[in-house]
Image 1 (cartoon, rainbow, N blue to C red):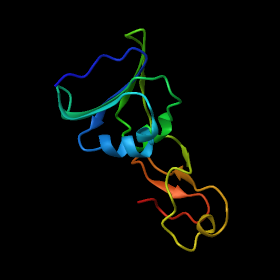
Image 2 (cartoon, rainbow, N blue to C red):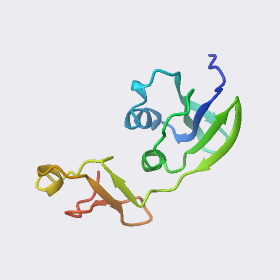
Image 3 (cartoon, rainbow, N blue to C red):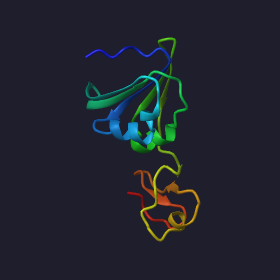
Length: 136
């Protein structure tokens, strides 16, 4: 298997095995016209196996979305085929329009307003700002 090196773009590394496609979908990477490579079940010294996503373009990347799905992931920024920055992620304190409230009676499901979730503990629990229903 040969995957070209990234010239300018991102390498999202240390994604837990099996979460790579979820990151791909939630970031809507399928709409991009640049090269995107998803590597699943790659060997990892740290976690045994991991997923990796390579994006060969410097797009606007929502780090909060990545941190929500895979908080242990790292994001490497590549410019001129060299890593210029490595970012570690942490759970965002608030998520806007990333997840939908599971409560069908919640105001955000019945009115044209944003779906806002707040981080409520250190275990990654998010609750709806309006009805306090826990996200799934």
